[in-house]
Length: 566
Image (cartoon, rainbow, N blue to C red; front, side):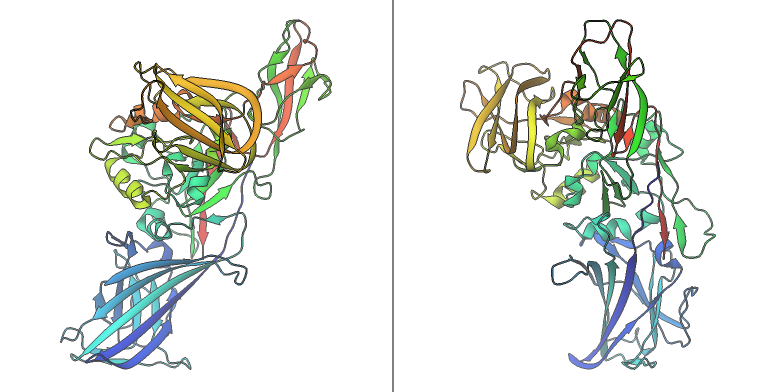
């Protein structure tokens, strides 16, 4: 199965020159540039620690000619200048405007001194490695060449704005909440070369946090062709573009990233989305870009003449596409058997209803000093390997408390879970790594539901007196709003949830973070395949079904690649 998806971006760069003497504006010039062949492959911008986004230098010159995409320098360079300030803005589509764009603005100041004296006729942006990425002539309103005479008495302020317009493509969603992330990971050395704590393509179990721009990189995992699991944990092997010649002008192809048959997450899982350069999200199911496909001949089991319930070999499939055979004879759905198409026999975290819910309440817990990773509550975490001291400080502090997930909750700060629609729920689990107490009768976790998100009715409780996983099932209800509270059974003292993994041992942290028994889960679990009459002893039972989610287990590989052209 292959996903082929394209989006188009229009890049517009504007230069605004203002020449002042004694704070009086003498001249103002606006001009545009062309993008050179180095714009994408050479745009290793400086990382600006103040603004958290990328920056670059500007070069000014006094030459003349016609700028072309193959230019490697100005016609007659004069000076280079680093930026004074950087800012980023985002404009979403509205009912009044279909434009969606993201914009980066750098400001440069040439002071009044003898260093910067001369005639300016051209300009361009330069990367760290001194590659010319844009080239522009100064032009008047009619498009004729114009110059600026800079003396030692003048101050020249240059404002450079790079704006990217995105075409309307409902299949690709931009991460909007924190648009500075776009520049940090899209226009930087991270994108075109080796990766600094990030990856070009990430496979997502949960997409809600990523769509909201909350830097939930914990749920992404990707591997490259030359993959070594242990070294990946410690060195963040690059799966992006290698140092190879670009044979096609203005086109760049990234290496294939493969989730192979030996991928570390065992068992059957379903991919809910892809995150590209931590700036765009593709979500599944979406048959426009990933057509549904059939999986046939799956083994269900062998009849014994007594058993009527069997584990379904697919934990998720498209409703009413199942076909059950006994000794090759097709059975009639709803007459000979019943089976549910979603979470039908086990608690896969990515299929739990709360995995993409909006979760409020609770709070964050971070531990930079001891380098501990506190797991998001009621979230399917796939990768804890990138949680290091630097990453915790960068990501968690950057998002503050505005994310749609929490890492902790306590007696005074319960969790509120908005499923965003009514869903079936019959299973509630508190992971083995979450708080328990042998005193005060144990720690009680209470699950409540609401019809309006305001008034809640208690549904069930879990009391933990050991570190074992605690799970309770109940009669299925269909609701949208839920609340999870915590308290001691026989004490009014405060108590909090607690689940962290020490990332000094990254492999152990990974194993703990993906262990289903360590997670808090809330959702629906079916009973598998239920036959009206038990299949005869020795009868061979098989199943066909269709899935519209990419399914990953030890029998399938999942390849992804990217191609950038401009």
